[in-house]
Length: 103
Image 1 (cartoon, helix red, strand yellow):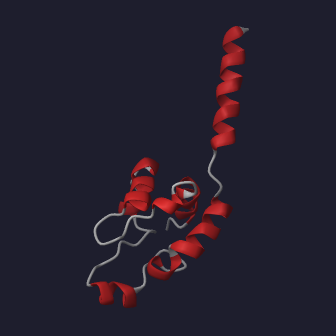
Image 2 (cartoon, helix red, strand yellow):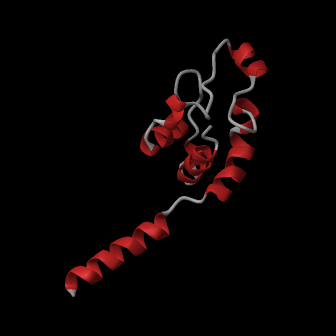
Image 3 (cartoon, helix red, strand yellow):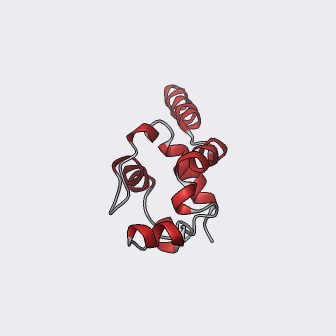
């Protein structure tokens, strides 16, 4: 019985921590879309201006990254992408949204 209670509590905690792709889309649209594009295929104009090839967020390479790695990339930046520490509270939601972009 004790084990059942522990498992139930663990499941409930996980459910409460589940990321929200809808909230992630709103945060993505506000903070990420201008560079990464509405569908995650990246803005070639921004890439050319910054002299960088942006990764397609739909790609197998990006989708194979762990959620923790994607959150780290969002918060700490990667390559020429500037750090976005103000998104730390919504990074998990943004990752959930990025997962919906998978080809």
